[in-house]
Image 1 (cartoon, rainbow, N blue to C red):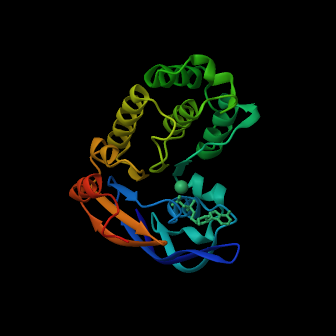
Image 2 (cartoon, rainbow, N blue to C red; image 1 turned 30 degrees about the horizontal axis):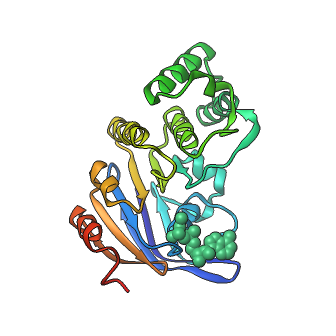
Length: 242
Ligand code: ADP
Ligand code: MG
């Protein structure tokens, strides 16, 4: 589904990713861990195609398409969705307006408003967020945790096949982590989606039953393993990776 080979990425002339490799098949859940500033958010932003991230060499193939030839909107349309570390506010555009346009763009059909509104309410109830989020500005005035849940509302409505979660747990209280994790698991199962999750918490990788754990250092994967690697990090931290 997503294969990245020998990727090097610069921001403002600084090399951030250096010979980065990963291969994520359909339906697999992968986790990336690594200390602050090692390039975790950079890999997320490069995959979705944020303009500031300059790919110097290497390739990203998604669903047999050369992703590097697509712009940020085309990549979203291809089915890639990122929940940012700190989702931005888009004041003045409501969730409902944005989602209605995004869905009709993707399907090429006018959205059936009755079905659409019903679905929005169902998803709000499932995520235990107030239904009035539907008509609020995107992430406007929302706390960090509410923004994460609001992004999940988008996820369920837009139905992407590849989801990237950058520090999903930051800003979420304990109850919300459970709701969000269950929701991601349900989503993954229902759509056989691929998931790439960035987190500092090995427990979260276990909760999500991640299949592969990668350790990133200075923009490169230096070790890949299964959940036992997460357990090792839980006990020992990054000692041994200095
Ligand atoms: P992580 O998510 O692993 O904490 P990031 O990918 O956000 O790390 O950042 C990796 C490195 O790239 C850091 O040293 C950071 O300062 C630098 N960096 C990230 N974004 C920019 C930017 N827009 N301009 C300059 N440097 C940046
Ligand atoms: Mg980050």
